[in-house]
Image (tube, rainbow, N blue to C red):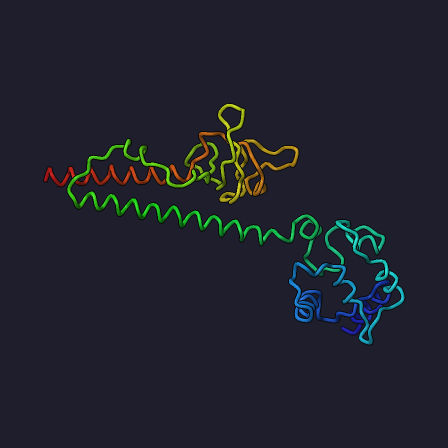
Length: 266
């Protein structure tokens, strides 16, 4: 045990920029900074963590560390810590972020992804609640007609319903066939290409499903990587949410007429 400790101390002594975290680690340091400053986790960059981890208990920094600290300045999108240290990141980890944080996770995933997905989920839930409310109204209307003992509706009755609100452009997106729904989105416009619609993909339901028209220039071929992108989609595989409401209501009406007919036969 003592031999292992001496070996670790010897290796640590060769480090040019020694940290003073002890067993605390970067995770607890991040929590401490959040408590002291009131900042959110996304607002604490690794340059701040790198400096705080190497701050002496008496204040200030070692001479080697101080040189790097003086060079860390705000410089736009270019990573400030990499520029100050003057060396590129090594593969497999990110300096100043602790273990298990890869370069892809830190540099290529935006900090606002969670916020974006939460916002999209709220929008989706709002639309879903609206559809459920419309279905409930249609159910009550069908039941009222049934109780009156008169039901002579046809599909034309549903087609003649006037539009009281702007057309709902939300839709489900399918691949291969209309029953294989893989995502939810919004129709933007008809394209000039025959049989295609332009849609924006908002909610991913089957991440590994292949896009009917991949974005080759951006290397996006799967549904899970296309959230937020504008895509071309086959018209027959774009199912409007409003169409589902009408179809569901019509099927309920047909089923109700069948039940009434059987009742009269009995």
